[in-house]
Length: 79
Image (cartoon, rainbow, N blue to C red; front, side):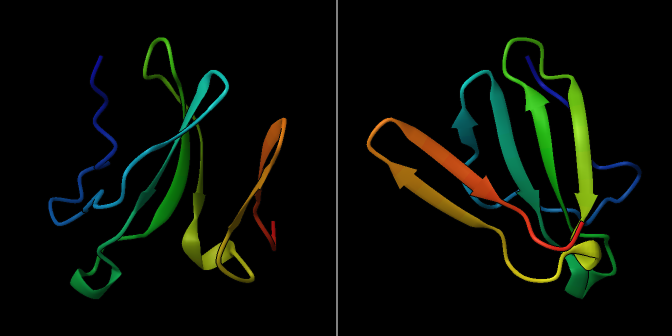
């Protein structure tokens, strides 16, 4: 599958590797220095459908990924 997350923003960049968490794919968009709106998004791993997107400006700080022996946790602060 492929998904267009640009929302009409031609300078939007997805430069980091996507993060697979169970049946979801987490991606981060950048390009704020080019006038785009940065965000973190979750997509359905099977279909590529956008499940949610959070504007980077809404976050109190950088999200953190914590790996435990049997689980991976993504903490998003400031929602």
